Amino acid sequence: MMKLKLPKMRVPLFNCGTIYFCQSKQEWEACFAAFNVIDRDNRSVSGSATTLVNHTTGDTAYLLGVFNNDVSTAAHEAAHVAFYICRDVGVTVSAEDSNETFCYLVSNIMEFIGKTVNKPE
Image (cartoon, rainbow, N blue to C red; front, side, top):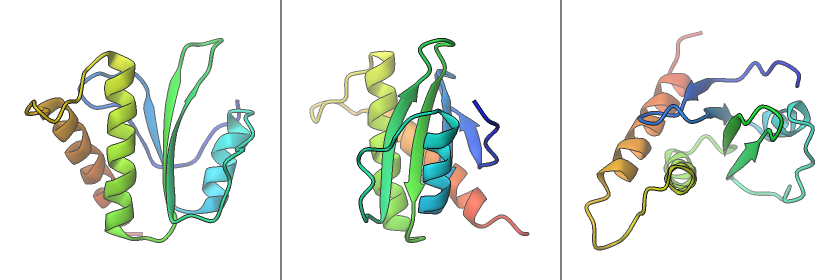
């Protein structure tokens, strides 16, 4: 796998993978190339989220793409990533529960995105 030069963070709370933040479709495509995977769902969208697993190393990458620089898209995609993480670690998310784990994941991911987008150059 080639080295990715993207903003990234370890999965909060569980440390079970790495979240990569793509701010353009070009960065998104570079992620797929780095993992030697073809993006079969490459359509014209404002954002996207997916999970990639390296079956040789067991490493999990959560890709979060926001292509329109919109905070609502970031929140939407952060929620998808939080659902994927909960699924992967066996945390059930249910409308009847308080879902603090899910909420903490979303807030940590959004904080990471905010710091990345607002980082002085």
